[in-house]
Length: 147
Image 1 (tube, helix red, strand yellow):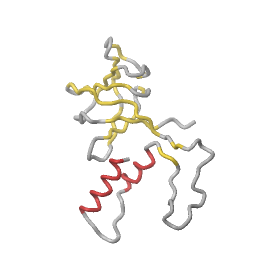
Image 2 (cartoon, helix red, strand yellow):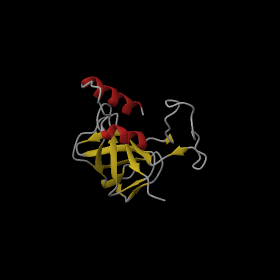
Image 3 (cartoon, helix red, strand yellow):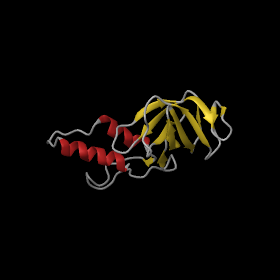
Image 4 (cartoon, helix red, strand yellow):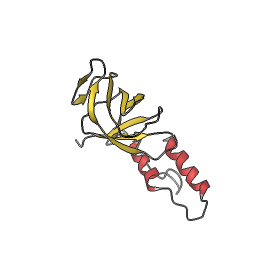
C-alpha cells in the first residue's frame, strides 16, 4: 500500500496540476493488496454503510507467492510463501517501479535439483528461468484462482 501511495505522490509532484489523475496502474495496486472494502469515509458527511458484514471484512484477490533470494544468470531463486505452478504468470513488485510480469518456466526445487510442476512446499527454495534482472527487494505475487 505504501508503494502505491508513494507512486501517486511522486507522479503528482512531477506534474502538479488541478486536473491531476493518479495513473491507472497505481489505482489497480489498491485492489491487489489485502484490504477492507473501500468507502469515502467521512469526506461527504456522516458515514453511510461503512461496515462490510458479508465477507468477513477483507478482500484478498492476490497472494504473495515468493520472495527474492538470489539470481544466478538467467535463474531466479526464490523463497516460496504460497503455492505457484509451472506456467503461472507472476507479478513482480520492486521498490519505485511499476509492477511487471514473469512467466514461471523450468521450475526446479533447489533442495534436490528436480524439475517440478508446483512450488507447493512452504518456505522451500525454488528457481525458475527469467529473461531479465530482478531486484533483490522483489516480491512476487499471483492472482488467486476464482472460486
